[in-house]
Length: 225
Image 1 (cartoon, rainbow, N blue to C red):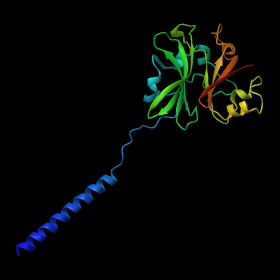
Image 2 (image 1 turned 90 degrees about the horizontal axis):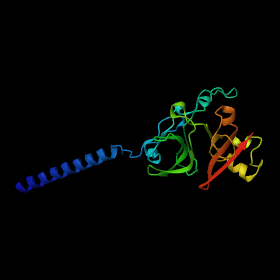
Image 3 (image 1 turned 120 degrees about the vertical axis):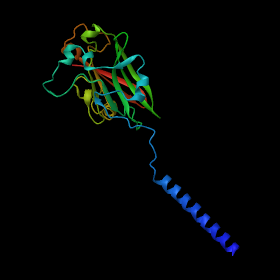
Image 4 (image 1 turned 30 degrees about the vertical axis):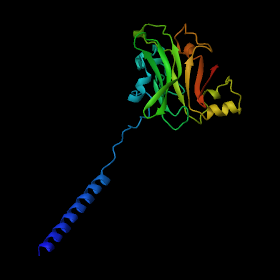
């Protein structure tokens, strides 16, 4: 009799252990796996710098609309009346590696000089600076210092390649590469990088330059017309 009771007790204990194990396994299976990497935002023209990108800013901050000279802030195009000319950030896959990158106009906290740069996504929430272009301010900070305007050209659009005096020959491999590559287009006074003497839009936008990446190498060209 005692042997039968002992055997029954062992069976009951084994059943309880099996039930507990299955319950734990079920709980673990049904529990969602937390994501450790936040999805990066898609920003077109304005927005906040994503936290992982901030490490590339150094002593700079993202430009605000008030950082642009008045002629750019107040400019309205008759051809594109809804277009903004005070954009400071665009997201795209600029080096076409499948990761989201960020092009930005930045202002130096101390000197109020400004900069264009692309933050290239290295994966694992790491970013590296690329296509850096520095500008010297010509006005007092309170008057607005940025005398360029930034626009994003998506892959598949001609952008500056459509301009009459584009240096890219029609139907050439160089032109086709540019059309198929995302790029940033910036206003400039002339083909050189001299600062402007006049701050009206006609002077500031007399030329434009394209900045883009092909096989990880920086490419650029300017158009004046």
